[in-house]
Image (cartoon, rainbow, N blue to C red; front, side, top):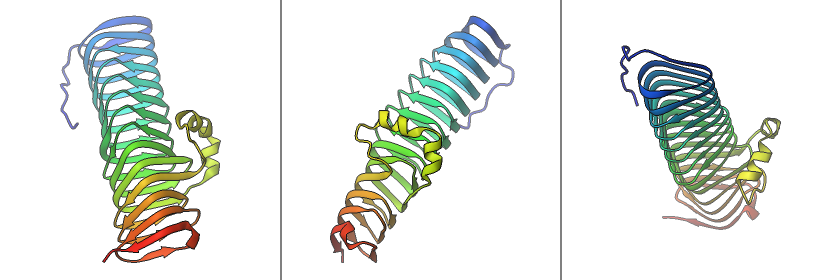
Length: 271
């Protein structure tokens, strides 16, 4: 976003206990308890804990959320940190984005540096620069970033594309298609994943949940390393097929290494 914010916005809003206020332009908005803002909100700081509802669009420098939070419109900010339960009915845009609780975005999510350590569902597209997921990610459309790192689980119903993709499988991972320059998929640490109780979340999110594996129809890149992967087609330059893979067809230009000959049904060298 990288927008400048007016340090001389009119006054502050402070709600403690139960209360409401109208929208407008403010410096700081702090809500603890049960609070509601009616109308669009423009502020330098929004800090909310307890149960908070914003009945409009939000434009802020920093947003810090703990507890239950709901925005009825779009949200734009430089920094967003959410713990607890959050819902955005429109699009979400943040330079620095961190979700350590449960979150649902009914529109698109766009960010520069995004960190997900809880669970998040996105009804449309996820886009940005850097994404690190150690929790559970569910995207209805495409996920398009430059750097993608996952140590948890995800379900991307469209295309997962990034220059560099590093996936340490921490549960069931699925993307319709995966594309990138460098793709590394390995089995991750299971004890950490199970410790946070994410198995139950995955069972509710993914109808065909089948444990710690990655599934994709097509995986295409330049340098590809795979473990614990199920795919119809793997296409690239240099490809390594490691343990616990089931690949129907491999197309390669450079070198192909297969640890278990039973892992690949068909391989074709492209001249």
